[in-house]
Length: 238
Image (cartoon, rainbow, N blue to C red):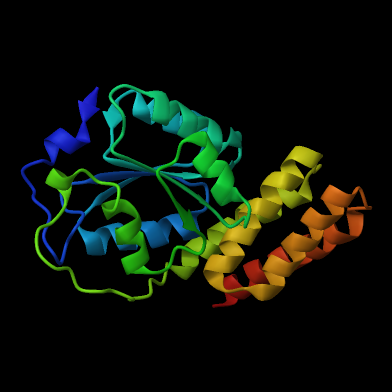
């Protein structure tokens, strides 16, 4: 196994680039959210690797051992909590394991699975991102000296939002079973929060509520699909 932390050890962190020398693996299926993480890693000095599902993450981890793993709770092939539990029990252990989600109730689930910390979506603040990692790092991997307090917002590439909408539009055009509804609603809530799209988030929440209450879902699915298609057309026009 290639240890990214050892490979990068000569690159010591600084107060302006406090994550220099670290490799972050983002297990995240949204390109829009992942682009925000890429920009935050870039500004912080870290290297970002990405896996878009559990299968891809496990394949990656057989070859590389990153310093930090950020795991989305809702993934297309299962729950990120399963991977968090595996990482927490592994020897040697990854230095920092963080859960992330747009679901208000996911934080407790992530901690119960063994996560060191949690990043609530939208992950759009550089200082919050850095602190979530630094507070769990071993002392020898932390920068010395006082760091500036950062509140710099991060703006992902809108092209990645369009790609997320195209992915969701394709799914919603097919036969959507209950498992897929759970996945779609969680995915879109996270992306909608990151994009500050209240209408999209509201439609995803309405579908999730109908699903949990056993109410008819055809109407909420159609409304959500229409909004996704409208966002896709807006992005194409831009």
